Length: 130
Image (cartoon, rainbow, N blue to C red; front, side, top):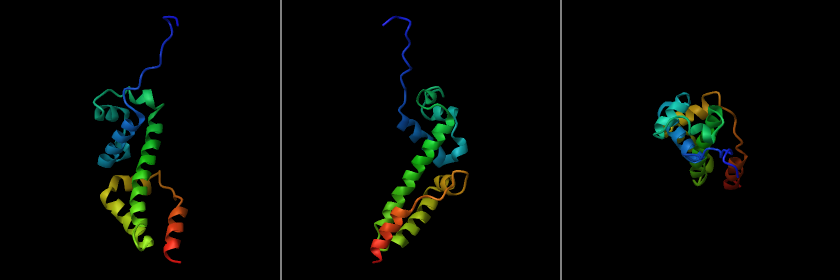
């Protein structure tokens, strides 16, 4: 190896750490508050390490939406475990809206809003109502 070759910069923070910090920001102030500068501040760093892991902020936001969906999925799973799964899922949806208002807003009241695939939910509910 010659002395002129440059190694790519080492990531100071993992992808998961950055997504987790971004999710915290969304929970507190909404998706619009997720900026490179705000993420850097949350991680006690500059904004630069964010771009060592992600190409741009749009990529970060997409990952935050995925993480928010995972939080919601956990609520749904708890609802599905109820004796009356259909009722449990409905209550889980309401609990998610109450306990995670900014995540609910992100997933169901904004541009990210889309009809999610609920076939797995319906299959479980159907088993409970043979």
